[in-house]
Amino acid sequence: MTWRATFEPLIGKTLEGFALKPIIGDLTRVVSELAQPTIWYSGAIRLGFSDCSETALTWKSTTGGDCYLAVGTDESWRPFSLADLPMGFEERWAGAVGAVLSAVSIYRLTDSDAGVGAVCQQFSNSRALWVAVGREESEVLGEGDDLCVSLKRPNGMDALSLSETIGSAA
Image (tube, rainbow, N blue to C red; front, side):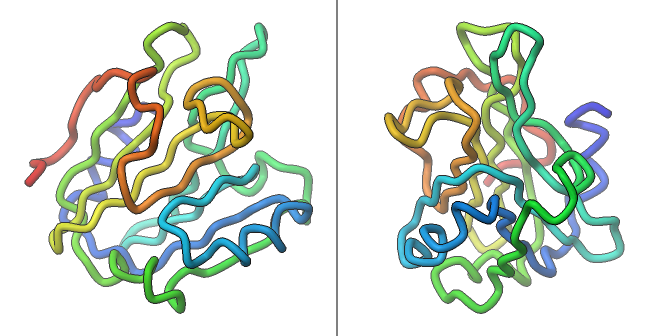
């Protein structure tokens, strides 16, 4: 499924909720970092929009070992290996919940054939939710098997280039 096919039906829909889905080993650290605007972990993120099936984003790797952001499901992971951390209760993160998705910007990895490195979901209330793939230790996007979920443009975006915007960015 293409990124356009994934996100175009969601434009104009209300974000009803989302959940971080870190691997169990990252859960304690992720919970301790909820007050931060950027959280790194290995796993997935689940997004629920009104009148639509849930959408999950995770990382995948090419046969050459390069990692990229992909639309996935919980089935992409070993059963029961991911925690489910709903974000609607956390004030800093709940701002996008209840807002309408107005645009999604897709960023490709500049120096790799692996594909997409980040998406930015922009909402009607001027909030944004970034999801990227990279390496937590160095905070380098596009070079690792961790997700970066952020309320602001992540560091390291120079490794990515804007590929397309779906919807109308404010």
